[in-house]
Amino acid sequence: MIKQRLIRLSCILLITMLHFPGKGQSNKDGIFYSSLNYSVRLGQLEGTATLKELKQHGDFGVGGQNGLASEMVFLNGVAYSFPANGKGELMPDTAKLGFAAVKFFKAENKWTVNKPLPMQQFQLFIDSVINTNLFSAIKITGRFVSVKYKCYVAQQKPYMPVTQAPVKFFDSTHIQGTMVGFFTPKAAMVMNPNYHFHFINSKATSGGHVDDYVVENVTIEVDYADELHVKLPTAEAMKDINFNKLLTPF
Image 1: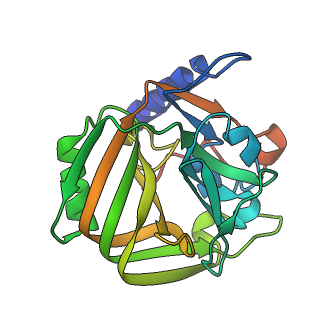
Image 2 (image 1 turned 90 degrees about the horizontal axis):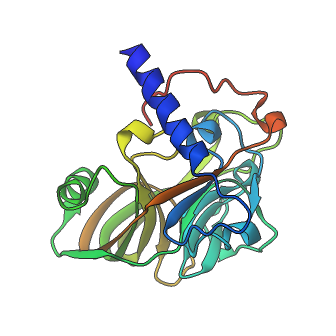
Image 3 (image 1 turned 135 degrees about the vertical axis):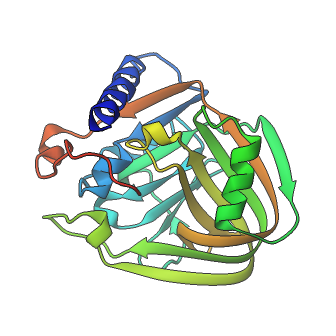
């Protein structure tokens, strides 16, 4: 089992490197990753790309600012930053992100759910209607019975694993807003969790990384990717983590 997982991970990383963008290449229908989410989970929190760079690769996405300074929601070409107080502000183009996943979003499929569904049941519904062998960007807009989201307290070096970092939780009920995120096949979760969503309310005044939710009346839009592109962290940024550990559940 361990050997199979290592072989699978190696194949994924090889495919990723083969799709790394060169000068002049376009990835208008690809997902661009700044770092790998699993390396950030282990404590690689150094910024690998600026927002200005990311805007060349998408107008939609999620991310975390250098040192967990804020959670990013990138929606309709506008990037919002949510620090530990959960209050939204525009993110400057100069901001560096330790992790980000972005894509130019153009919905290919759309569905509506108009009854209360908790997170697990809602994700099972999405599993039943999308192609789960493909990477995709997902936008969920409408009314939620509740959303629980979080923002981290900014960290200084030496960084700790994300699972140990101080965090602030927020609970909103009967709220309008949008969940911005991605679906990643489980075999490739070194790149991003299976479902990874950030939330922003309809007034863009509050949001963060989604932990739990109950939808009420929402529209689901899905945009599949046909390419993956990754900007990897520097060797210096990776030197204090052990990226050769087996992938553990997110």
